[in-house]
Length: 318
Image (cartoon, rainbow, N blue to C red):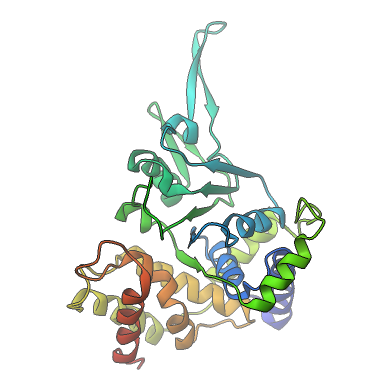
């Protein structure tokens, strides 16, 4: 568990600093920002979905600017090659050996922008990195430095020129964030923020170091999860497999993702143990991108949300 109430207060202060820093340039998205931070604390990866221009990339870049970590961005396009992501080896004639040149995946924070604009083959190049924090190229394995955190964006509303993410790729994302339209007041504030300013966020300063992120992750993993909570999560997973409305249930990886998210959520509000409400609150954003309703061609959406809501209503906590 986190060490005492003073430790929890200090961790809460650091998380609040991060939240406030991102909120300076990403307006009206408090819930989405919290989900992004949850992914960071739970050592998962984030998929941000939404229409063009709703702030997906801006939120990812604001998080990266708030962390004293290496940051790289890949703009996914149909002509991208695996070497453009992972790296490549070149023969060095001077010493008659191959020298490996690291690709952009060798970083702490990786923004995979418009990930569904490239082919499944290139999307799959990230699978090993996301699941095992390592990259295998030409028979050699290279370990990625921690923290390693992938933020992928996609426009899931318009399919022209896109390639659907395969199930194996979707399952690597801890949380899916849906960026919707803002309200009238927020739109006015965005206009005021951008009035006369060409580069919003350029003055953002980092508020957390890599070492502090790793320490927060360790604290999140130590948040107590009682047997009754573990059984509740297992029953929720089982319910997705038993549902007649879904094509399939979620994986064991999804159940671990839900537990880790609940632990991180408890830490964010200063608790050293998980409540059932932590599980109920974040089950939709952990499960929705992994499920599909029978008869529908795409994951997510209101139909999946309705099924998840019905499962939460049906499965008892105790």
